[in-house]
View 1: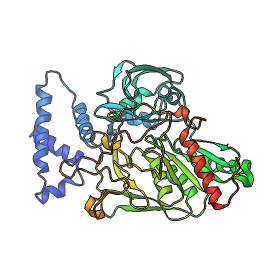
View 2 (view 1 turned 180 degrees about the vertical axis):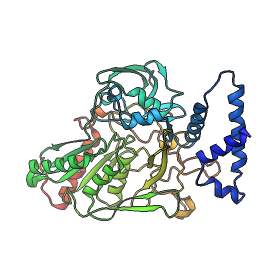
View 3 (view 1 turned 90 degrees about the vertical axis):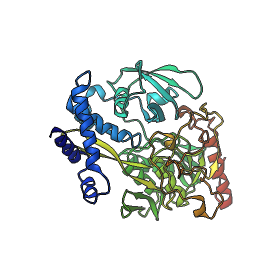
Length: 453
């Protein structure tokens, strides 16, 4: 009797919408599987050498389900969920690291510009083995994020490996944000340079102000704009859409696809261009991820900007935080975005129009340089067409295809997304920035604009 009660309870908890109709049609055997869960649940409760609370067993089961999907889908306990909604003073400061999980190993997506992590030259692809002497291999993503946060001014010690080098300890002081997402300056006296280091609610307004200030400083001399999206780990989806919209006068910004075939939504641009039609070069690299890829893809597809640099990270998941009525919440990937022309980003990344590697590279070994598609449980990309769909041959970006026999996610070739340390971005030794300047000056000559030196 107890087993049946447990099974029915888990049915209501785990699959109230989908399981029942499937069971009535006799297609899934969900009841049998839940009975199996109930039997295992009872065995653990009564026979485990150490007693385990029922609540912990159920929470662990939910966590296991989500961990088997993709690296960012997690269960948050009620305590973790409340802490996320109302951060306490003791967890208000950050190192600025944006991380992901790869088979239990913590990998850096990118550090936020101006953060302690960026100043310590931690870069995309670096592996984090320990946090304050505690191994990270068996921690969940919320636990890792929680350990990286703490009181302002407090120190955290990270054991990190850059590329193929030996692991080293780095001590970081946590700082309260917000870290700047928009910085700008003039290159020479005729090219506007705007660094977009992330996307927050205040980013669209800050961008608008930065571009206006550049136009005021340059007057009629302004011949183009460089948008620097390198080492940008993303952030607010709505803010990224607004920033892309600021430069795109018409057409679409992105396509959002949910699970259902009828769940396709196109996000259209609104009239207006903050750059007033000036040529744009957008800088990208392997640390350009998530919402930064949304913007880069929108600019590229609309022919509004030339992408220069190296291949981007390759992640387009949209996550939703779903409360579980007094029992915490789940962070679930509910959709993904594509470029306006329908090009997939998930597991593939974006290829730049002009491939330029930095002279001063982060030494990231090919065997260790990971992207979204390399991560355990990474989302498969059903939008990638098979070679036959394109009439044979290869197209730009076709190097990564899903393995139809194994069902594995598309895996881009390693080592093709050379990154640069955040501290070197925008400096005189920044080769990619120098190339972007040359491109804009060349366009100015072709178009008849005066390009001052």
